[in-house]
Image 1 (cartoon, one colour):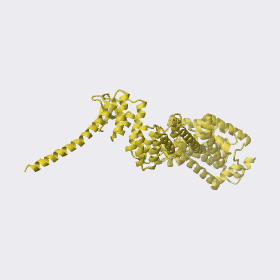
Image 2 (cartoon, one colour):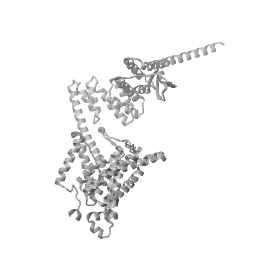
Image 3 (cartoon, one colour):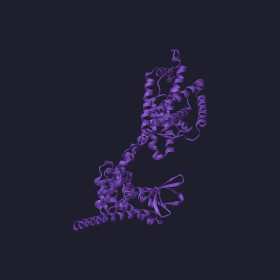
Image 4 (cartoon, helix red, strand yellow):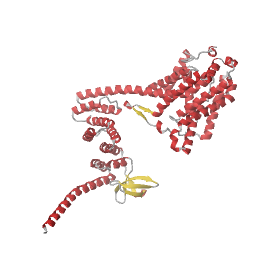
Length: 543
C-alpha cells in the first residue's frame, strides 16, 4: 500500500531535481551578468573594457540600454555598496534604477553616487558593442543604424553575427546596410578571396565611408590582385561621388538662386519698373520676417495645437504689412523725389536705418527664433550623401509660384496694364486718364509686399534679426542689373545664374573670393551690355 506513495515521492524528487538543474544555470547567468555590470564601475579603464566585452557577449535584454547609458554618461556607482545604477539628473538628485535588473530605486542624493568616467577609446568600444547588440535585437530602423555604425568602425569579431543577421533580414534598407557592414568587416579578412568578395559586395555604392575604408585598406594590402580590385573600386566610387557632387551643387545653386530671386523680385518692381533706387528694400524683407515671428508667437499663445500652420497665415500678413509700409514710404517720401536718383538713394538709406532701429526698439537686438513647421523639417536623403532639405525644396517651389503669379497679374490684370502704361510713357498714360500717382503708390506697395513675403521664406532658413535685409540688398541689386532692369524673366535668369555660379565657385575659390569674382564678372558684363540680359522695350527706355 505504500508503493504508490513511494513512486509519487520519487516523481516529485525527480521534478525538483530537474527544476533545480534548470534554475541553477539561470541564476548563475543572472549573477554573472550582474557581476559584469557592476564591474563597469571599476577604477581602471582596462577592467572597464573587459566588463564591456562581457556585458556585450551576454546577450542579455538589458545589455544595449546599459551600454548606451554608459556611453552617454548616465551610468553611476552607488558608493554605499559599489552597485552600478542608471540615473537621470533631476533637481539636484539622481533618479536611479539598478542597471542589471531595471528595478526603480527612486531619487538618490548626488553625493551618494559617482558617475562612471569613460575615455575616447571606451566610448568608441561602447558604440560598437551597442551596435552589435542592436543588429540582433533592434527593430528595422535600429538594425539599419547599428549596421551603419559598424560600417564606420568595423569589428572583425562581428562577421559571423552580421552573416546571421543578413540571412534573416527582410527589410530592404536594413539588408543593404548590413551587407555593407559585412563587406567592411571582411575587407580585412586574412583570405584574399574574402576580401575580393567584400569588394564585389560594395558593388555600385557611393558611400563616402566605403571610400575611406578602401583607401585605408590599400595602404595595408600586399596581394596584387586585391590591390588592383581595390584601385578599380576606388576609381568607380570617386567617379560616382563626383557626379553626385555636381548634382548636389546644382540643387544648392538652384536653392541659393531661389533665395536671391525672392529677395530681388520686389526690387525688380521698385527699381526695375519705377526706377527708384530703394536702399530700404532689405528692410521690407526684414519686416516680413518679423511679421512671421509675430504670427508664430500669436499661434503659440492662442492656438498652440495649430502652430504648425502659422506659415499660411504669415505669408499674406507679411505681404500686407510690408506693402502698407511701402505705400506709406512712397506717399510721404518717394513721391517728391522722382527723377532725382541720388536724393532717392540717400533718403531710402536713411529710412533703412530708421526701420532697423525701430525693430530693435520693439523686438530687441538679439536674433529671433522662427521655427520650421513639422511639415518643413527633415529632407530626402539620396545616394552619395545628397540631402535635399524640405524647407529648401518648398522655398524653390514658393519662389517660382510667386514669379508665375506676378507675371500673370502684370500681363492680364487691369492694374498690370496701367502699371506697364505708366512705365512705358508716363505723360501719355496721364493724358489717357490713368491716375499715375495711385499707380506709383500701388506699384511701390506691390514691390514691398513681395519683399515681405520673401522675408517669411528667408526666416525658415536663417536668423531673423534687424540686420537681415542688409545681407540681401547688394545681391538683389546685382540680380536685377544683371538680368535686365524691369524684366521678371531677366530677374529669374539672373538669380539662378548667380546662385549656380556661386555654388560651383565656392569649392575652388572660397565663399568670399567667389563673391568678389562674381561681382567683377558682372561689372565687366555691364560694360559690354549696360541694360542687362533682358532689356526693357518702350518709348521711355528708348528716349
